[in-house]
Each structure stands twice: as C-alpha cells, then as structure tokens.
Image (tube, rainbow, N blue to C red):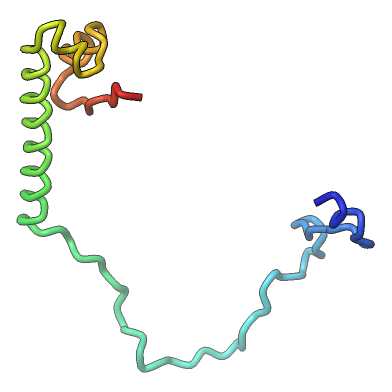
Length: 111
C-alpha cells in the first residue's frame, strides 16, 4: 500500500462546507415554475395505523417469550451442581441467572 501512496502526485483534498461561497449550493436548483403532476395525490400520505390484531399478536408474542424464560430459569434452578458442571456452566452463573426477572433476556454463558 505504501507504493500506491508514494506514486500519487497530487494530494487528496476533500471539499469542506466552509470552502464554498455563501451563495453556492451543493445541488443545482430546478426550474422556478412548478407544474402539477398527475401522479401526486392532493392529500399527504398517511401511514396506516396498526390494527388491533397486530397489537394483540405482539402482546401475545411477548408473553410467550416471558413464559419461556420463566420455565427455562425454573428448570435451570432444579439442576444440581454436578449436572450444572456437566453442561459446562459455573454454579455462580446459574444462581445469577435464576435470580433474574422474567422480562430480562437470558445471557449466553457459553462464551
């Protein structure tokens, strides 16, 4: 890479905002006259509001994730120390994970 830089004869200069004159624009203006187009709607575009079924689906999905976390932590708490070491976890890490609330995501302890 050093040979490519040494072969360059002119330095690379990036234009800065202060280098432009006050009246100079970065993009040229279009024509001053505005013509109505047939494709443009007369009213502004409105984003659709979420329906009740979408919101209810999101709530149900969140509740399922929370339930899965609660069940997984309860199963982890039921393991004895030998089984915890067999799966490659530290008992202190298991105690920490079991003490977490259901809305907190599980940590990846295998890292």
